[in-house]
Length: 258
Image (cartoon, rainbow, N blue to C red; front, top):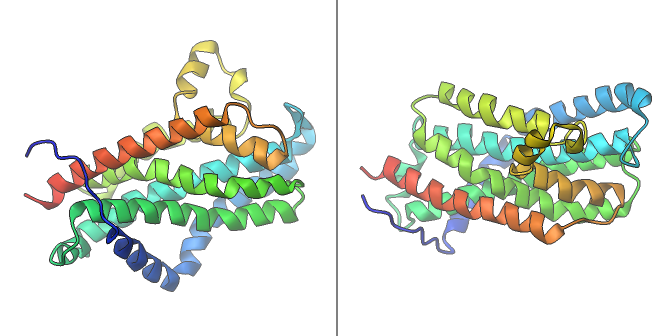
C-alpha cells in the first residue's frame, strides 16, 4: 500500500462523541487512575521535599513541582488512552470494524481518537489544577491560561500512542514505549528539577523532547512569570502533533485495511 496522506472530515467528531459518551459511564475509575498519582506526588514531594528545597529558579518548589506534574499528567493521560483504549477498541471490542461499516473512514477514526485523547488530557488535568490551587501551590490566576496547553500536550502525545497501538500484538508491547520513552521523559524533562542542572549533552537531547516544551509553556503560566519563546514551544508541540497524526493514520490504515 502506497503512502496516502490522511484526509479527515467533520464526521471525525462522531468518534470523539462516541468516546465521550462511553467515558461518562466510566468517569469514576478513569479519574481515579489519572488524578490520583499526580496528586500523591504533589502532596508527598511538594509538602515533604519542598520544605528542604525552598525555591527553584525563583519559584517555590511546591509551585515548580505542580507545574511539572500538570504537564506530565496531560502526557500520561493521552499516551495511555491512545495505547490501551485504542488497542482494546481495535482488537478485543472490534469497534473500528463496526465503524468502518458506516460512511466513516480510517482517517476519521484517527482524527477522532486524537481529539478525544487531547480532550481527556484536559478533563483529567483540570482537577489537578484545582487541587494545586486549594493546596496553595498556585496563587496566580494566569494559571488558567495553561488550560489550552493541556489540550495541546494531549494532542501532541496522542499520535505516537496510536502508532504504538497499531503496531502492538498485545498489551505487553506498550512496556517498550512507556519504559524507553515516557518514563525517561517524566524523569529528565524538568518535572522535578530544572533541565539546566543536567550535563550539556543531556540538555540538548532533553530539549528535543515534547514534554520539555510543554513544561516550558505551563510552568511560567502557573507561576505567574513571563513566557520565554512561547511561539517556539507551541510550534514544536504542533509539529509533534502533525507528524504524529500522519504517522498514526498510516500505521492504523495498514492495521485495519489488509
